[in-house]
Length: 371
Ligand code: ZN
Image 1 (cartoon, rainbow, N blue to C red):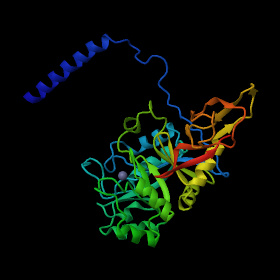
Image 2 (tube, rainbow, N blue to C red):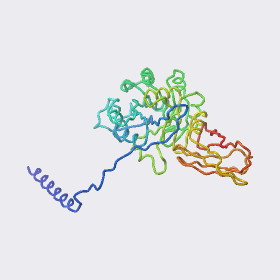
Image 3 (spheres, rainbow, N blue to C red):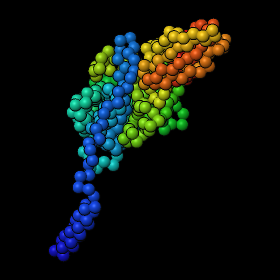
Image 4 (cartoon, rainbow, N blue to C red):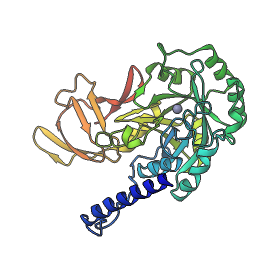
């Protein structure tokens, strides 16, 4: 009884303090409208009639070792202009979440799917098969039942994912290891057709050796955030316009379109100002993005032209043609902007430039003929 009295007194005191504090504030605190979040649209070209869908295939929530609720992942994706995400919570790692129901690996998908439907975000069911290297971490995307992947033997888990029709991605092959290696088990998985792609970019780092594997073995190239925190706490959107992502060349804006494109290896990776991918796709991306306008003014020595960048990807060019005297040595075409270019009237055309921020392999950048 005594204890109750003390508690009541304390509660009354607290209420009194609050009431006093309230009086010092204006009655209507909300001035004007609530902040309305809008979706940022990302401008990218179409290539060969394919849409470029903006996707993040590696995301965590509180249902593994992330710190956010599944629906927030959908809101972030919508606001940041993405088309598709896959929540890929660790199947084996759900640390320190005693208050959350454990064991049902489909939870994060189930909780996010209604919000995804409301916002037209394609939500791909996935899970992360988590082991130390080898084989490391593998995301199984487009699975039907993540629970069936919860197996002691990781080969059985991967086989189950494959049997469910999953696309299997080897995550961050260079993370947490002294040296990045293609182990025997990766060779086995690759030969069985159970390893379909490699995450060459993860969170803040990329793995040049893994890009070589993708090219040599004709695998699918992927780049994702692996975000555990809120995305705008992980990436500073004042210095980068977007989160790192996989661009999927899809027939349409559907889950099946994405699945078909991933198995057909039609992807590019975009992180910060860098685009990575196969040479033909990068070339088409550049051609569809950059428009070199006809000469609009001439003087006895010079000609004037404009170059328009129709996309949200900037292009950083360096002249590789040594003999093209008078042509700019470097050209920067900022995202969504037009630049004016002054060229010699008589010159050696066409002039070749290297696009420094379009990576084909660790040693090779895209070459283009601009003029
Ligand atoms: Zn992960």
